[in-house]
Length: 88
Image (cartoon, rainbow, N blue to C red; front, side, top):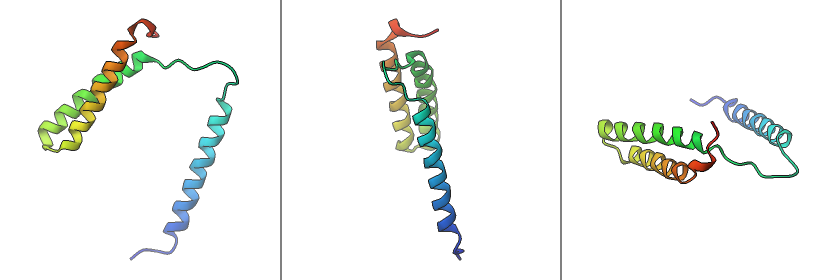
């Protein structure tokens, strides 16, 4: 049985999260210049996602986890292509 308060509650939570996101995005907005991504963080994230994806794919035999491994591999390739701009 679904109570009648679930949908309005979810709607209110979603609007609150959207308002927080807009506030944070407008506060961090810079007028000039571009933000250079931290490629060393991409490398660390790539190693973690690749390892977790391969392990979960092997253990659970589900192709969705292979997608996580591929995502990690893509992060590794992107980060290794930009090793000259790594931030220590």
